[in-house]
Image (cartoon, rainbow, N blue to C red; front, top):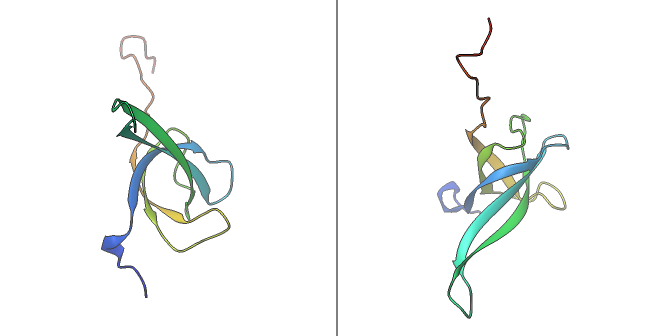
Length: 96
C-alpha cells in the first residue's frame, strides 16, 4: 500500500552539509512548548536527503519530502530550493 504524494510528510530546513554526492544534510528547527514549564523551546533534527541533481548548497533553505528508503540513512528527497543566500554587493564601491 503506497502513500499518495499529497499525504507525505514535508519539512523546510537549511542545508548544513553537501559534501557527499547526491546527498545533503538538512537541519530542521521546530518550536514546541517545554513539557513542564511551557516556554517555547527550539528543537532541531538533521535529515539525510537525496539530491539527485546536486543543486542544493550549504546555507540554502530547502523543502524536503518523505520517500521510500534510498539508503541506510536517506528517507527524504529534495523537492525544491526555496532561498539561496545571495552575495551582498555595495553599489557605491562595486567596480566594473
